[in-house]
Amino acid sequence: MGGFILRRVLYMIPTVFLVSIVTFIIIQLPPGDYLDSLAAEMGEAGVDNTAVVEQLRAQYGLGQPMYLQYWKWMTGILLEGDFGISFEKNLPVTDVIWDRLGWTFGISLLTLGFIWAVALPIGIYSAVCKYSVGDYIATFFGFVGLAIPNFLLALVMMYVAFKYFGQSVGGLVSPEYLGEPWSWAKFVDLLKHIWMPVFVVGTSGAAALIRIMRANLLDELYRPYVVTARAKGMSEFQLLMRYPVRVALNPFISTIGWILPTLVSGEIIVAVVMNLPTTGPLLLRALLVQDMYLAGSLILIVSLLTVIGTLLSDVLLAWVDPRIRYQ
Image (cartoon, rainbow, N blue to C red; front, side, top):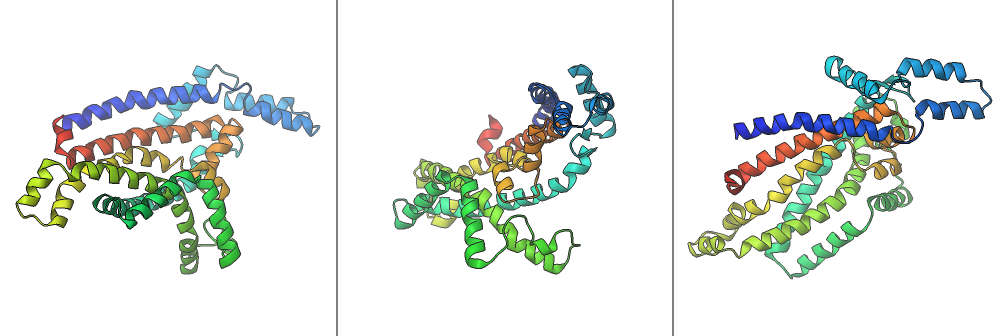
């Protein structure tokens, strides 16, 4: 296992490096750059911007070849931890994304806990009590969760919360707490708001995992080892949790590979609709205005979390399921 982890870590280095190159190239493929857009806006306002734009172009090195821009960006990250400057905000990228990363990680970890807490027991129940009334109800709500877009569910819940419960919608705290220092009242207000994005973002993931858990567990319940254990007198609950459920847990552990990158990227449309202070809207805006260092840094973080998540899921799968370890 130690050798396996070491090899995977060594493979991660060129993978992230290649992803960063492709990302940097794709971001600059559209014609023009951020300063061209800025020059057009200033020109429409009747401002003579030639000198200002040329000064900024020289300052940011946008007139240099693409490979020199990439080299400057990557060496700054590796040697100084400097991810560059956000053109639009005129601030270091680390200052722009730091606060939003914290909110993104918090919401996504709560969402992951919600998905597992809902999908695991319902999936087990649906498999053990297949074709029962409860199974049909779980199946119905599972299909509904998969069919309804998350942003539409967010709009409906925001309307219901405001119309019938008088709760302020949008953001994670009420308007009166914006910019205020943390207090017990602000924390309670946060709890009143944060459950909604967690529920909205986690609905489709929970619905998908319920179906996966049910299908995988049904495949295991009638295996010969289950029949043998039952014939030896093992209790149904002990038998269920020790053997078939443990094998059927594989898809839950595999989700770590894609859950970690969503800690940064998240549900962009949901975050925009609900006005969440996460990195999703920030990444969308950076791509729209070609703020290449900000967009490239966010995508680079997502890529790094993807390979780390894949490594963690592989290691946990080998620990949970010995068959994978021997393969």
